[in-house]
Amino acid sequence: MRNIKVNPDYTLQKVLIPGTSLHMLVIDEFLFNTDAITHFAHNIAYFNPMFADNTLFPGMRDKMPMPYTHLLKRFFEVLILPNIRPESRYQSSFHSSLLSLVTCEPSLLTVSQKMPHVDSCNNGDYAFVHYLSSQELGGTSFYRYKPRNLIEFNNEHKQVLPEMITNVTKNPKDHCSYITGSTSIFEQILTIEAKFNRLVIYPANILHSANLASPNSYCGDINQGRLSISSFASITTI
Image 1 (cartoon, one colour):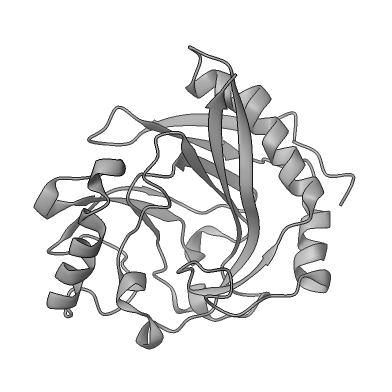
Image 2: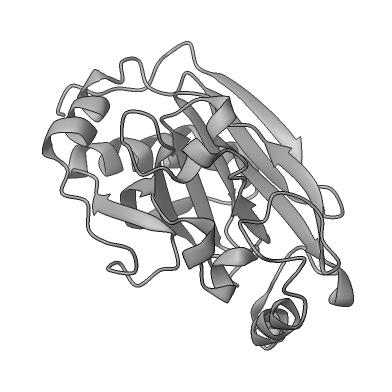
């Protein structure tokens, strides 16, 4: 995987997250060549079972090789941070880059997996999704928590997270599977479709969920299922 590089002809779109002053970035044709990534996924990766990484991801995961994480870090610091944080100089710290394959049938989901979530409550944290499957297997949707009118969660909103779980438990008919649209508790405000070799970057404290509407999205077959790379980073001022 040493020869992977960013496509010099990638395209970048800046998308406003409704109801906030925040943006996400959609980068199409991110890598110049994805052969090394797909070879790793199909021939080398050892997928660990659900919950092995101490997250609620509804499937199997394995760590990406360091060349991928290093490339993503350089890309983020040199080409992306000046775009989204132009007022200061920053450096990033990547916590993980995880090759992710959805495998969990809807009937086996926990309550927390049937609702949108945030990856962090810190303003300086970012999440990345690099799609390695096509549009019909599902992109990422963003939500508003209606009872509190919350889209962006900060540290003072941590106590709201268990409240959301309680409300979902009280409304099982609305939350009996993967969330793919608005419910009595959550309003879907934006959807970014999946596209092979598309990278999406967004603040980690925005309420979101994978949009898994197709049965193939969670079939667990690496040749047909929803494959992506999820990465997480924090930034600090330098």
